[in-house]
Length: 355
Image (tube, rainbow, N blue to C red; front, side):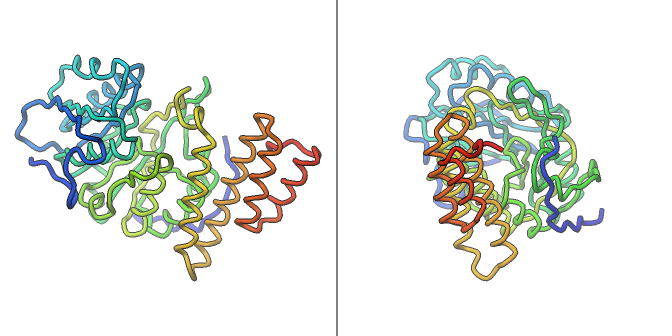
């Protein structure tokens, strides 16, 4: 399989034993109240699946079922309950499958929950699934076969189907602004190996790689470092940027997961916190990019885009002053003339805030 030679084209959206990271104990980041429901097994599986969950008894059962129905059945499913106060613990206890391992801990956030799950993983491959998403039955079969064919790669991610507010988008990747441009009109159903540079530049503008569509080698995860538990939002993007600096991804052009945007998704409940975290992350990356003009141009585009989305969020809610303040702050950070024009246009009531 030849390696893709992407050039950053931009396009408007179309529709065995427990292993720990050095110095890490199983309960770190999750508090001392830790209880496990663990089946007895001596054989390490091929893949460990980590599902973090918090108060999602209404959806985590479906997520677990989609894992246990995988055609690649040599797996363990590790569900980390991040201190749920609903019926999640009872639901986990009711599932009678020896491949399920449930860890019950104190509420510490999704990054800590994922880290705790990986700390208990026994397989050489680790896959993630958010507790409101689903997998197609052949997901692990396709991804593991791809990694077997490409020992030079450290991770693989796939396309997703997106469900949002009653609308279904068959291809999440074709809805992205940057990665869809790299794919162009071609399909890579057998997969394509991407260079570190290609993926890193994309990640400076957007995050097309979703945890529910990602499988990686455990040793690469350990080398890159765990999810940073100080990030309460955008922790996946922060990890992917670190991972992409030294590790390679492959991509499968198949919708092997279903991304479900529900009422309890951060996009719905606290978009301001999410947008603020994204901008802070990109500012950090910009500080690390001294002398790399191509990467700095990419992060500049990413910052302008995130500022626009943040401003539109306030504008859609009728908060024109807040929207103008976001645009002005964005201009100070990026010196983008378009953001300055938007700020004054919003204040003067000359235009709608949203595009």
